[in-house]
Amino acid sequence: MAIGEGTQRPSDEVEKSAADHVEKALDAAATVVENPALDKRLNWKFDLHILPWLFGIWLFSFIDRSNIGNAKIAGLPKDLGIDTGTAFNVALLVFYIPYILVDVPSNLLLKKFRAGVYLPALITLWGLVCCFMGFTKSYAGLIVCRLLLGMFEGGILGGVIIYLAMFYRRHQMLYRSGLFYCAAPLSGAFGGLLASALGKIEYRGYNKWPWIFFIEGAITVVFGIICFFFMPDTPAAARFLTAEEKDWALRRMRLDASGATDIDVDEEKLDWYWVKMALKTPQVYLCGFLWFFLLVPLYSFSLFLPSIIAGMGYKSTTAQLFTVPPNMLGFVVVILTARYSDKVKSRGIFIVVGSVVALCGYIMLLASDKNSVKYGGTFLIATGVFQGSPMLMGWVSNNLAPHYVRAVGVGVVISIANCSAFIGTFIYLQRDAPKYTLGHSVNIGALVITFILASAQILYLRWENKKRDRGDRDGRLLEGDVSRLGHRHPLFRYTL
Image (cartoon, rainbow, N blue to C red; front, top):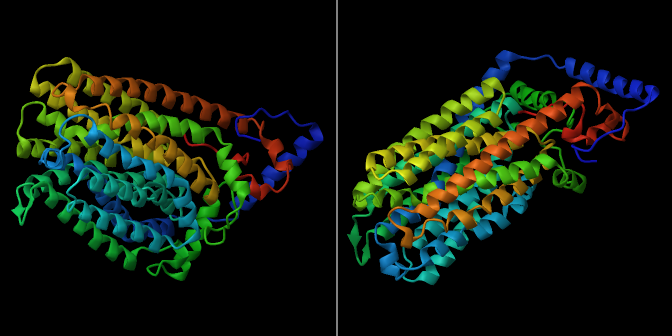
């Protein structure tokens, strides 16, 4: 039965039996005594030993997928003979074909194999591909490299969300998601600075843009190799934890599940029952399409900000440097909103407000002829769109349980969401420069839909929580094995 389906009110006898199940579940939860001091120490250790690696993974992921935008204004299209038509946009687009297709399979592989080996392997492989992209002398070579880059990067976002959920409680997740995701806007700032320097190198026939790929890819490879030695697979395998801390890390996750599961992450096995539950869950599709429309402006902004600024009349190096301040503001806003979101235990309202802020930014780009106003609009866009993605990561992860449901659900959401690349990579065309009216207009429409879908999901989840508060879902306790209810358990409450 799907979450949103209506349930008949049980008879008095059945209702009493369901109430007994709820009372027993509450009593069982009460036997686990909270330990705030140990909880704090555990989080501090996870923050110290896990988050820096995830931050680096996402930083290099965004740099290596977006640096083609920096290479564009450093001469790549002219050298490869693709400086007219839509050939460059196709090169952007093909990255997302394997990126979308590998999401769900990659998440299942992460659960099957050691996360501390699987994730670093992906990083190292895409770093090598980025390096080789600098050697390409043809359009075909560029397409092949972009396809391979998408294949190896495709499992990263879902993998990181699932990885975080192995270590942190539901309402500690968003701040940590924000701390790693803030690497996305930082990558725009860092990548712009780096590209402004690397785009001047000319050596042995490799002039300017190849060095952006050579150096940035090499740094990624080195980072990936280091990750092999320091990323733990699960809390039980973390060498930096004491026996007491490992035990509490597992017990607090069972407590946090609110009846959704009593199986530890180390013990859970793939069961197609959980796969089907994920595929029947309404909020998987709500979040998927919501993220789809949010990613249209996010992807196009990340890929085309150098071109938008160059369209204001600034030269290559100056345009690269001017991408830094908006991205730095986005970096700060992601951290601040993520921390506050966990504090108030709410996600959707931040997406609603962010979509309005970004909408104002695109209106400034579209309506004004003054460079100062247009450039100011890029700050509002960075503020609004970057913080939305970590909110959605936390929202999806918080509302799916247990782990395999989360793995499949997150993969489906990301697969749906990343289809937005088919729009985002084709709305800023060379023929529309320098005003890019089509691109700005499409992004305005996408943000309006984002606002509507985020509001709708808040209302849906609030309605479902009220149903559970009234006991309307208690009948599910009599359907069979209570341990297989997952997030459908009457004690489980959705995060708004």
